[in-house]
Amino acid sequence: MTTPTSILLFAAGLGTRMAPLTNDRPKPMVEVAGRPLLDHALDQCGDLKIVVNTHYFADKIERHLAGTKVVISDERDELLETGGGLKRALPLLDGGPVFTMNTDAVWRGANPIQILKTAWQSNMDGLLLMIPRDHAIGHTGTGDFDIAPDGRISRGSGYVYSGVQIIRTDLLASIPKSVFSMWDLWTPMLETNTLFGVSYDGAWCDVGRPDSIPVAEDMLNGDSNV
Image (cartoon, rainbow, N blue to C red; front, side):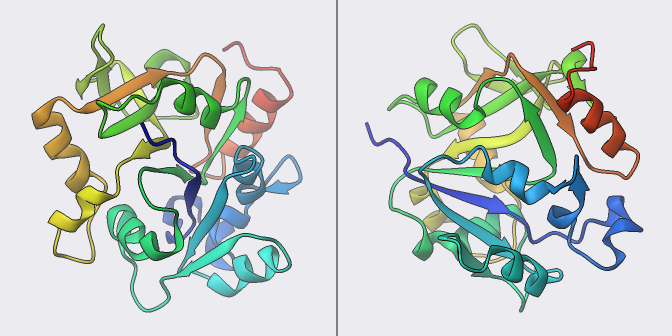
């Protein structure tokens, strides 16, 4: 079984829900507890090879990461969505399965990367880290998936996708288009029962809107009831 050694951090989006804070910066550079959201994500990555994709205000992310070992996947020419962004970044990532992580959430508790690494098995095409719906701080939508006793997942409402996963990258070869979402990868996995999920026991906050920032800071300070 191949254990992932690299991670793609998604930082290319327009951050429209975070306006007006994103009128002059990309969402990953919006600060929570005095630090950019991107830095909160980088804290979780350990010794993985890190690739960050950029599009909106790409220069601000590149300046922030200058002098680090982080590699940039440049999407200035076209916004590729999550699946397309992963496909574009493939030459920069190590071969085999990889981690991907959204950069619009903060965490308190066990390292989410380590939880996925421990749970990863050879019969999986994808493994998603899930938040129980009633523990999804700052998340206003419905749930995304349900988790069966054997760990396989299906569309449902019991769990919210945390934005962190391990996914096999060889499956991208079957998708000819350049702009597509992660669902283009997940849907075939759901059909073949090779998409799995594991629940996160710590605290997680979705930081998608300006009013989520104080909620996230309270959670980081241990003031949340979750």
